[in-house]
Length: 104
Image (tube, rainbow, N blue to C red; front, side):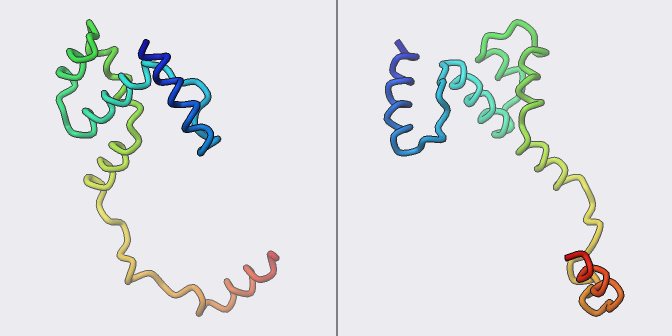
């Protein structure tokens, strides 16, 4: 029944937004909820329990899928390599500008 309702409303959404996915599955709701919980820093063990996975290794698939979490971790852990204010003004390098203009 849930799949029927999802697809019914997905058809309505597609009328306004043709790029909306053609196939909607109930599993998408599970995946979305797991990703939201992961992004809210909920312990992976609790997510495993909610999803009913027997082994946390199965739940770890969701960890691999979170690009937003990867970006956040990189931004928090990686040192700033350059200061934007200390970058040179490449417009003043006439040789470089001449070379770049020759490429067009």
